[in-house]
Length: 310
Image (tube, rainbow, N blue to C red; front, side, top):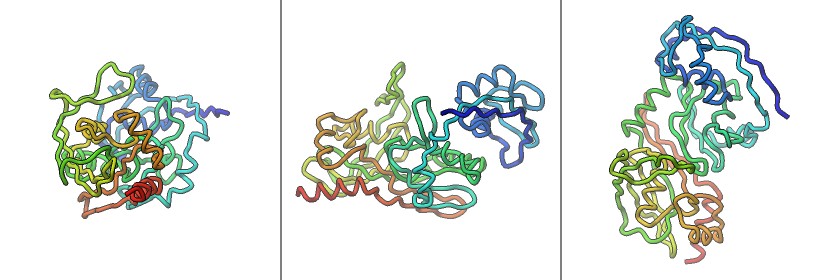
């Protein structure tokens, strides 16, 4: 049963902590649960005003700006919140301070909302008063687990976002790839581009794309696959999945870029999702941080089953 919540007209004075934030991004937080299409519509229609004037979605907010937020009818379903995530939140928090939060993201939960998504990390966390202003710094695919950074304020979100863009954050993943790795360590330097006019939101290798660099190091070779550490110098969409598929060694369990027969085989070893886990992340923000995410039980079970086959 849906509940209709009426959001009354509000005029908000922008504090210095939110200065520099884009208007559309600000409204996504202020109107949590409202579709992006509706947010852009009320900006275009002039229902959102800054200092009584019309502005564009990309307008950068300034300290003491007065933002008029119109009444918006939101259809919300309390059951869309991930009860599992909220209930076990303390169990998955890897690090928390005044600036950011790092969680061991469970597989199967999207990081942000969408038209076909019934629960997500951001909406779930913002339902708690403590995290009402939380924002994403980077993303992980729905079926990828591991280290996910969430900023508690705009300054931190902006600073860490720039560090990701400049490749100043070290990211390592644990993955199981089909086949045998050709050497103990290989590098894949292949530019990636998002495919146009496709309905599956896929990515391809293309000289016209953005630079992407991945390093793959062998941890253990099994009969039909290899357990590897993957360090990515860039953070392109589906980078690891496309890069590994390009050398004929897709991520086991990947239904978009992988192999149907390979995935079927690894289901017999207990693999029920894509074997990709963001195992650690390192960066300097006020001090050095090195954060590790334990390997989830479902992936550890697959590794144990593979060792039994040796």
